[in-house]
Image 1 (cartoon, rainbow, N blue to C red):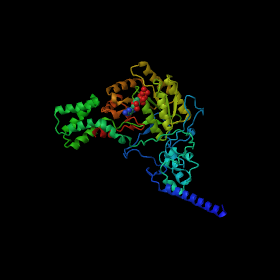
Image 2: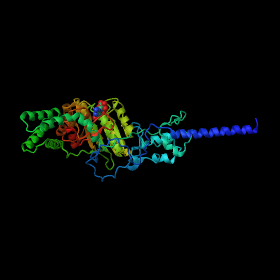
Image 3: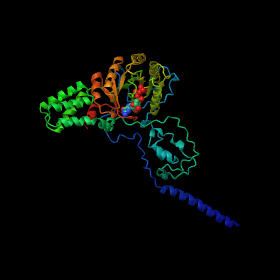
Image 4: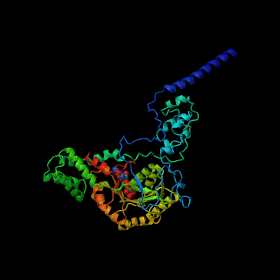
Length: 492
Ligand SMILES: Nc1nc2c(ncn2[C@@H]2O[C@H](COP(=O)(O)OP(=O)(O)OP(=O)(O)O)[C@@H](O)[C@H]2O)c(=O)[nH]1
């Protein structure tokens, strides 16, 4: 072939290459994505999954009564344990897993490698762009997934590469195993009871409707009053509370203060709220003291939801920027410690656990000791759920508390009660109250019972507030108990 022919072939090839490249770029630009465009969140913005509900506040925390120290400054994330005086910087004992610094999924902790990365690094390929909005705090390693061979798109084309284009995920790319555990996003605590109100209403509002129906009907005869009493009793308000409420309603109606249905509703609302003691302090005493963490014991009969509630509470505290250590002192049920560890790993809390069947008091002691050494803010000890009829086992719970008190003040003893068991819960409450001083109640499974009236009885019986309510099996289905919101749900 002549030189001219070779040149002609070379020119044709060059044109083909250029055409392929241009075609590729145009193809990428025109490709239609079925995924929503990535909304790059502002730094500091968290994803709101509350469904738009807003309420007065979230779960509030306070310091135990024995604290003498001035309040610590606002709990921004504490990156290092040395923020607190750690007596001996001992290495973690093997009983506990590696200390996971609580990279609390708060936006402030997010390094610049989130949204800005999209702009700053055009070579950071599609996966990084797409993943960033989902869990900003955890996506720092995203650049590691960059495919080296991927044809670098023009910088301006990057935002359009929304869909995880199959060809971008090159099979030969070795995605490094994440070094940090994948932490979960935690729902905002503010507004939870309102967000979960639907569940409460579904199970409770029949009571409210029936009461309103009776009261709004005008003059009440004795049969109607009896029906009101029955309704309250069936809803598990207990005879004392029922009597108190009926007496008050009778007096108000006799005084002629109820003329319309709206009056009846307003009166019922007021009377029920009053009976729930809105003045009780429902904050969780979980804030650290000068040199010791806040210490909480979670007690209750097995199956009531102790471990679940402990995990849910840990999430709330982590979301509040606290460093949390969980003590798995429930050695009675084999899987309980694993269950607790899973909860902890999901939010980056530490766990201290012991051998199966080990001494719960020893584990609780170790947990608090480790919490002091590592300078965590709060230690929550999940205790063994024992049948309250077994005296020896109940005594063991007393021992757990006494032993823990050798290391730190116990700020809260939360009794977990299953709302679905009705009166039986009261029997449990009495027995536990004999062994330890209960400071608050967590009433679980309120989503699955129409007997929410147990709230009234429990408070009356124990003289301590219901502080938290469990409204589902979901990780964030724990809400502060707010009398007014509860009554509103009751009245529908
Ligand atoms: N529907 C509903 N289920 C709940 C709630 N809280 C806990 N549960 C469920 O109740 C069951 C028992 O919960 P656990 O946390 O294992 O109970 P526990 O008291 O720790 O039990 P032991 O470890 O045996 O002592 C689990 O299936 C939970 O998902 C709640 O508020 N609502």
